[in-house]
Image (cartoon, rainbow, N blue to C red; front, side, top):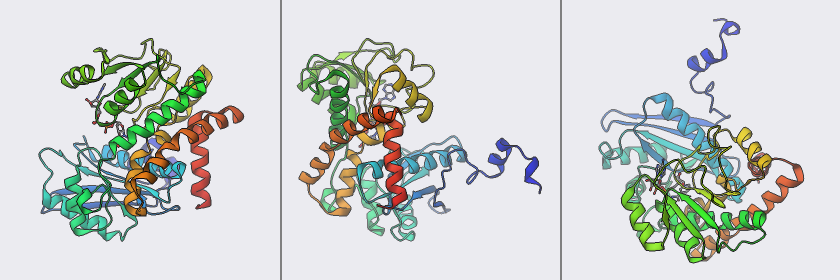
Length: 362
Ligand code: NAD
């Protein structure tokens, strides 16, 4: 076949893995299938230069295989950069299981998935992501040691969300210090979009410090409960971008900073937990810089969770987890400095450091 005459978009259709838009020189992509349990999973191993590829397993009712593949490629790549910027001896990996976690997840399916993880001999280490719970990781742990996020009774480090929230809060404080000259949030208006596991802890910490907290979520009961508990103001309309706030903390979905929202954002600081906040890392990162909005890169400040699970591998204790998570404050400040010195976006500044570590293998 003469590939010269095939257009790029068609090549991507014919070559859905290596020609995939989200393929970024991934080392290995493993397709797992088991007829008996109905397991259909993809494990993406992006890079293992710094250590075994660690990243959670997501179970999601993907519309089709292409969507699942794209997700695993994108998420596993993100894990490489998150581990590298945090200084962890880990590579980047992720797994997706195709299906509805509420109706299709069985113990037998999770065990089978664990066997596939085990067959990779430790090159990939799994953990929880969307659709997974500690109990599922315990089942995986019955058949392989290559799993984190297991119960504390099995030697696990417990729920990572409070640690993630603490790291994000460090990122919010660092960005505020850079932008407002103080890391004290007292009197600052902060909008927390998504008040789930991570968002609620951020609301708690910000309210304690005297910030004026505004909350937004699709879950009305959650809004009422959190509002009452911490005295936060509810903003019901999901279109939050034009709100007159000092700090915007995206803690729900990715890609909220995009062509539609970027010109309406009034916040001077953006720092939150959600992964992949910039719809286009290069373009929107640069635009935020041009607008003078202090953006704390998501993959840097939401690394508390990975620090927490890494502790299970490195066998270190709670105080070391907190120390490393607290250090997100210093790293974020360094990234702002570098971004100014080199006149590049903060995303690019953090990415460059991570890439250099991956390339140097140390
Ligand atoms: P979660 O599911 O507990 O909370 C997400 C919240 O966002 C929910 O309350 C949900 O109702 C709300 N939400 C969903 N769509 C929304 C919308 N359109 N507008 C407003 N709110 C909406 O998740 P989490 O564990 O708190 O994680 C939050 C984000 O941080 C996710 O993007 C996750 O990938 C990322 N993250 C989490 C961790 C962790 O340790 N939990 C670590 C790193 C990154």
